[in-house]
Length: 208
Image (tube, rainbow, N blue to C red; front, side, top):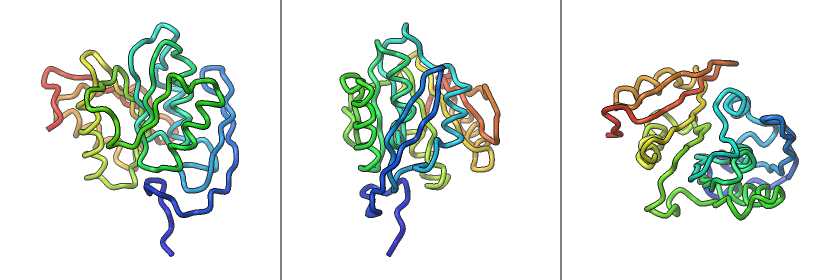
C-alpha cells in the first residue's frame, strides 16, 4: 500500500480527525485537522513564521487574496479574519484539505468570503492582489517552479506575494530564480531556517 502525501489529490488514509490551536495577530484559532493533509499534527513552523513575519492584511485591505496550497486552512482563516473587506481564494490539490478549509472557514463565520477550489477550477479571469503561500517544496524543484510561475502570472498590477520557504529546501535558490525572471524579491525575514520572501513585479516582471 502506497502512503499518501499531503499533495495527494484523493487521500486514502483514514481521516482520524484532531484539532490545532494557534494564535496569529493576537487572535486565537481552533481548527479541525485530519490525517492525509499537510502538517496535521501541529501548525507548520514555516506557516507560523509567515504569519508572524509577513505584513498581514488589515481591516483596510480590499480586493482578492489567494492562499496557495491552503492545507486545512490556517492561512486562509487568518487572512479572512484580518481583512473582512477582502475575498479569499483557497487552493489545494488535496480534496480532504479543501473540505477541511471549507469547514474551518464556516466555523469562523467566514464562508461568505472564502472560495475553495482545486487548482484547475479557479475561474480564468480572477487575478489576485495578494498571494500567500507556504509552498509544497517536497514536490521537487521543477514542480515548484511550475507552481510559482503559474500563480505569479495571476498577480494583479501592484500586487504582492508573500512566500515562506525552508532555506535547506531551496529558499535561496528560489529567491535567485525569481529574480532572474524579472521579479523584485526581498527577503523580509529569516527565522528558524525559513525565509520569508516579498515578491512584486519588477521592471521585467515576467515568468517565462
